[in-house]
Image 1 (cartoon, rainbow, N blue to C red):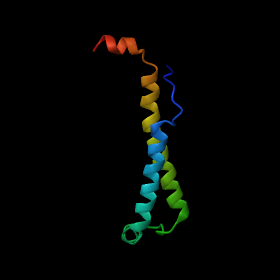
Image 2 (image 1 turned 60 degrees about the vertical axis):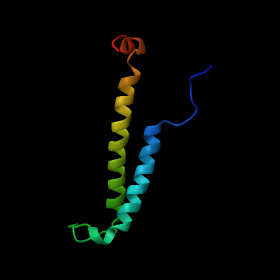
Image 3 (image 1 turned 90 degrees about the vertical axis):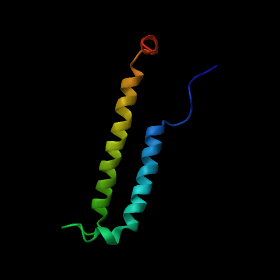
Length: 82
């Protein structure tokens, strides 16, 4: 029985879904944000793309770093303490 999976990791998939929803939410509340933004137009594509990239990078980093750390731990050592 093989324990390997062909599914994509959940972190990047959830990040993509989250960014899709955030982009949709951003465009729907665009008129509300126009009174808060100073020096940036609400339809500024560069600001939107930069925001999506920064939030996406932070989300991927927040998911990948703990997963890498957890993958380096020996399961027998962890189960021994439980």
